Length: 91
Image (cartoon, rainbow, N blue to C red; front, side, top):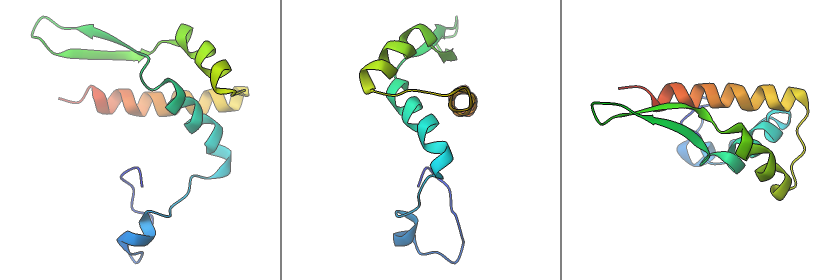
């Protein structure tokens, strides 16, 4: 799940049953709710540079999804965003 192997002794079928730790669930749900709200810059060579999530669009999306984030959840979301931005900007 999510490209991670939890245990090399675990079969591929069991990998699909992998779960997110409960403490990380709110941050993951928040990221999934706003995952299409990226600020992206077009580069002169035709490529894109992923700047980060559009936080102005985040709050209405959270409200519409019925999500309430704690400061800790927000930090978790920003960690996910940073990892996603790094992966998106790899060339």
